[in-house]
Length: 573
Image (cartoon, rainbow, N blue to C red; front, side, top):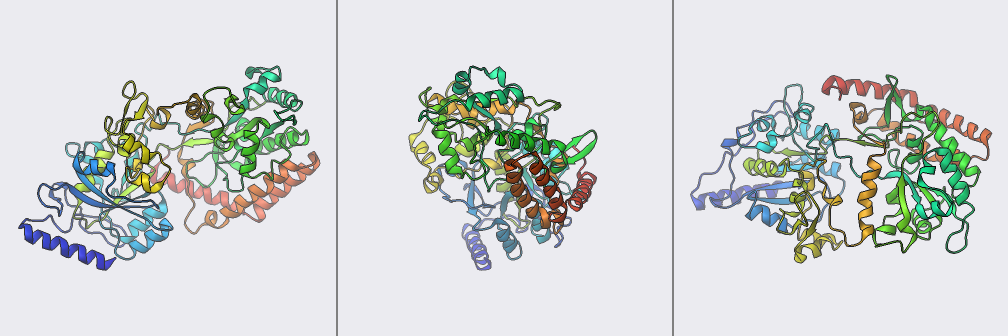
């Protein structure tokens, strides 16, 4: 990398002499010590580019993830030749992103700018390197960078260090933190309306847990198209799922248990003024008691614990299950999105509200929406292309509802356009673009777009993949399902306690994996218990294992200390 850097510098110098043109200051960003302390950044007005007069501004952007790169894609050509007039040259990370980051920051660093998923690990590595620029001044230049100045202050304030410096440009945030987009909500109770009708019931009859139990009992007496008895209830117990994303969480939500977090180490809810971590919520046990009772009564697919994802989807495709709990993506959206009417069983799937459980006042949150930035753009303090970087990111962060789509696919009227009206339905209008874009082949897709939506932001007024043109009725069901589920009470906005991260070298890093192993081990035992006595025995074993194997009490103490440190540094929200 050093050799390449020298060659680049030499080439730039020769070009400068040939053109007899003055170049920008070689040190765009001032200085920084190895601890990432105060930078004395030069003003944006003094920055320039090494390109000749009349040529577009240019910079190199290192992506903190693996991607197929084609630096002559149609969208990049638009950026270079039209708007914003910047040539963005991309480089993707190879292999593990954190390993690549540490290696690069301990050697030559990156040339101009880098974008990574937001994480404490990345931030610490960048700051320790002493190779990045502090950027707080550029958020206060509305005349030159109006969109950087429009970033909600609540995001920027939480990024300042003790000296008031901000070391990255935040991207992929909600433009309206007080009314965020709910995201792709998918955790639900998904029932087949044709089976409800065959059972002589209505969807209103399934409003309570008792009503659902009645339906399951009636469904058990019905047969599928091949003459086999239906599985009344099914869900996927995927060994690759996580504490925040698994099908049982749909049941836990009905029982009032919060299972969602915002990149935190464990789901947490505040009840009666006290923080309750997931496994200490008494309703966690109650939810698994109900699932065990349903299993004992043969209301749950007897193969639920052993089924692989492919087998689970095959059963749903063949119409073997009356009601599914969990994510509708696991049920398999292809069952309905290719249909234009009630020609197969997949057409009849419909999400219903979480059934009311006696004694439960409110649904538990299975999805916590975090409006805060998801990515950070870091800038090399010695870049010669600061103006290009700031101009481009100011363009991508325009606070318009459709801007994420513009950044991803180009402006309306070029490769796509509105079908009826702005912020309505849209479709691709250029087949030469749409063909490679929708080919499913990464190399072909890279010829048209680098898919850098994460350099933009979003809001609740319009989301492109809820409004794209559909050619068959079933293709619109994913969007309809997600919107409906998002309004059923299982989604809320993040609080500070949802974002508590694992302390570097701390207990959560050490025992977190074992905690997850225990969840997966005992969920199966709890569901398969042969009787109530065995369930109680398994539950006690689970509680004992939490302490002995996962050091649960110590983990909670560390969580409380980390939460307090977070609040002391950044405040509560």
